[in-house]
Length: 265
Image 1: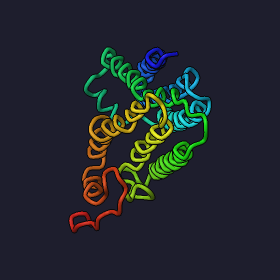
Image 2: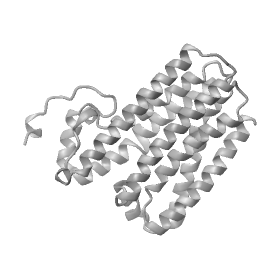
Image 3: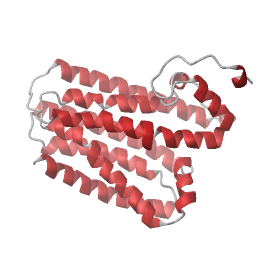
Image 4: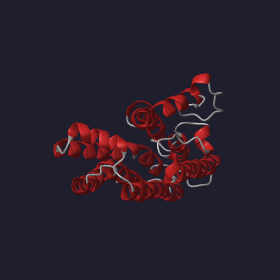
């Protein structure tokens, strides 16, 4: 199957899944399901690309395992939050603006389907890789993937544990990885996309793999990730989060600054 046909097929499947998600959102008034479906859709896109790619079997198998496992883990984590918590504050804020205008919500869900196809570009590039032997870049890709997924899972678990304690209501998590970055989960999510750049080395479409880390960074840094998350944090945690912003790096982990007198209790 050609790359364009594969991408269109992925988009159609993602659009159908997001339509089902939109319907669920309409019944439950919880748009957080869109993130879980997006993660599962991107993971499924890796498997679809691997199945129908014309590259060597080895990189396609590695792609299916890594991309599929990443998507399943993230989707399961997000679904657990959607099922057990009220609507995420970011989407509750959108609901306050859009109300029950289901045309706006449907367009929003379908935009996420388009993003699934966009983030499938690195998978299509990898699935066309003709290199059939174990290479240093393939080994490095696997090592990088393991480290990043483990780091993201650890950050998610640390935040979930912090939020589960009622004593922390209204407070900002500064434990574990969250001491060194305000968004360590986003950092590892972004970094993990370089694994597919490495997997695609040798492919005639290798340049497409750079769409993963580049587009993910743009979305996380300036569009739907950090700006939305931090705006919600400021609405709910106010001065405590402002102090966190002043002392802790935004994305790339580093040692926090010493708090100023205005940040001390």
